[in-house]
Image 1: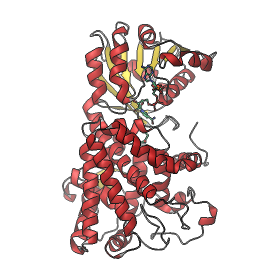
Image 2: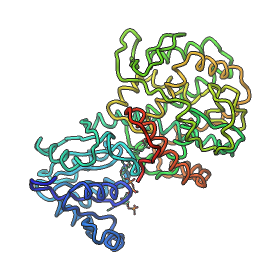
Image 3: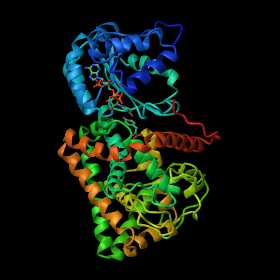
Length: 483
Ligand SMILES: NC(=O)C1=CN([C@@H]2O[C@H](COP(=O)(O)OP(=O)(O)OC[C@H]3O[C@@H](n4cnc5c(N)ncnc54)[C@H](OP(=O)(O)O)[C@@H]3O)[C@@H](O)[C@H]2O)C=CC1
Ligand SMILES: O=C(O)C(=O)Cc1ccc(O)cc1
């Protein structure tokens, strides 16, 4: 950012994301950064940032008065009140952004409470605070003001080396409902199902291998994070309820076909969803080489068009990140891996993978094109979730054995029941739009898993990096990309 006159950057909300932004922007060459949190945190911030060149101020009024580019980085549910309070103090001609994960309330608050002479060019980094910014999507939403403001925002974030994605406010919420909100619903449900079975998946004398590793690590990663981030993007996004309801409907309907032993209906439905989402014909394995592009169609396979290379997760790489510990790593590898949501099972028995059958069914029913979304605005979590779905659906033999297990296996049935109940519970909770209920559900499960958070977040970070490097065709040294 050297050479030209730099904009003064202001950050309101010094939580995980605000701090990450302040530190990275400073390291990336932004000269003047003013920050604040709630007034009661002023002194602590002053001590913490002494000598760093990041300047804490008492409140959002001071930050807004002095800064040319102001980023609100507060809880989604608090944003309206915070903008109502500080927005009127915004410097004439400044540009305002929000880091908020859901944009409908942000748009309304900015339109209602920012002075007319203030531009709105918002942002959203599609990753958590501990993941590297490099190569990750950074959504830029230019909503109001001169076009030159876009260049100013791009320049401010240049050092992040993120991939800029340009969307409108509405496009943002639609794409993140399809990617983040519904994906989180699946992982939240897995966690609740495990908790209600009083079972730690890595402790049940079984080999947590292959795609189960992703399920366990990402579930723990989500439950170790702040509940309000997930609550905000699910409860306040107008599109998210529909997606999450469809997911729970897909889970329930597939489960009913399983218990009614309706073999043909279940098979037809699963194979149809495979063709619609991935474009692969029934009984045909796609070519195994990574150069084969994955197709996606929202209506029929004849409309398929090439989207991007498949993810091609390998059991080998995933097994390196098993939370089970080396003592568990001696079973046979698993096209017949252990339970999906399940507990107390023998590693060699195939299971229904109900969470994944339902995910692909949900994408199919809603006409969601996961690979397209991934290309535009995928998060690391979404990439892994597509990766495991692709892994199961790619192989006709794996998918057939999952369908067979869904119909005939009784060992995993209790786990599947827990999963159905959990998915319905999360969907209902989100449809009520009640933050307190969400927090209670989230914290009950997160308390259950908390003893393993430290290990799981490190392992999950390394797993995400290894798979992203694999995707980028880079060789990984196994070091985490977490700071
Ligand atoms: N964490 C993530 O993975 C990501 C989060 N986001 C979004 O970024 C935003 C921030 O998230 P995150 O940093 O994780 O959350 P945090 O809870 O860590 O940070 C929010 C901060 O804002 C502070 N705050 C609340 N009210 C005010 C106020 N009136 N004035 C100044 N500061 C205030 C909070 O204080 P207090 O704690 O006292 O309430 C807290 O320190 C959210 O909207 C989230 O959706 C976006 C991408 C990723
Ligand atoms: O990748 C995910 O889905 C995450 O869970 C991390 C995350 C959370 C909130 C965001 O707004 C962006 C990324």
